[in-house]
Length: 425
Image (tube, rainbow, N blue to C red):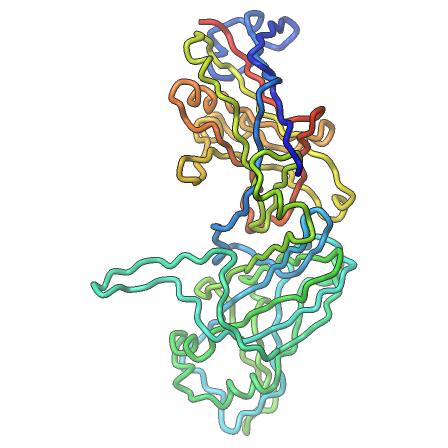
């Protein structure tokens, strides 16, 4: 079992002279003192405990982009992304004409970007959804309520494949993916009762949508970021009737069509499964794609409450290390940090992040030092003065839209650290 040895210094006061520093600080209360009077408090014998937790309550419904694919790497295991999406008719009272016959039916998906190994082959499958994505409900009193779908949501699907494709990425030339759906599906649209095409409510009841997925890869792999709202993302029905031999009709994925990425992760081949049960670990994991967060618990700072210190700056630094797969599966350029309340929910560090500003709060990757650093003076003040939660969560911002991940180093030599820069009142 891995045991964490996160340490930050015991309450040993180290007096540091800052005469060589520029006097242009804007940290909390810094305008009241001279920098020569600054004191740095560091802690190196009290543990900062770290643990990892699954992100199991994130919604990926109707996000700006969607993900499709499969990746498999030693440190983070298997991550799969699939898509549920509805379609809409751009007009009402659709008429296909007499004796309409299907020629083909093409599903086109607009590519936005890639994550992973672009030399990998993805085996894509398409199936029909057998239930609607219903986002609201009405109770017996006529009151409407919103239904929340998390990124692990499953909908019932038909097991019959409507399309299959062995996809190989060509980043410089490929901007779309095209999949030929079965002619049986195409003909079923043409043979259906015209009442199914009177409006989109009728059409949605007739055709619930498509489930687009990939078979799991054995190693490497790739995630495709798709823009389903782009006009190129659609189903095109090619057909002919007694009047014309070259007709088309598009079924769109517009802003009224519900869609979501279904994220899933399998950590069984990694250390993560056992570490999820621990509250004090050596190596921590942060993963997007609704994957993993790292929680840390700071040591008690109660002894500072009556010390008459004014906190001017508080630096919380997370060291990370590069793995052999980072050249393919890149790390986040920025991480997020939030407080974890007594109910286990995240609370934004409003004073530090919003009032002080993003550049002050930081959280960006420092490639030279291999660290992420956050400035959290107002949060630390709140912990000391008000007994606010001393538990924090480190995560990938907009996780359902960013599959990047990183390993945090927290051994005996390269540890998470907290430094307080204070002065006496």
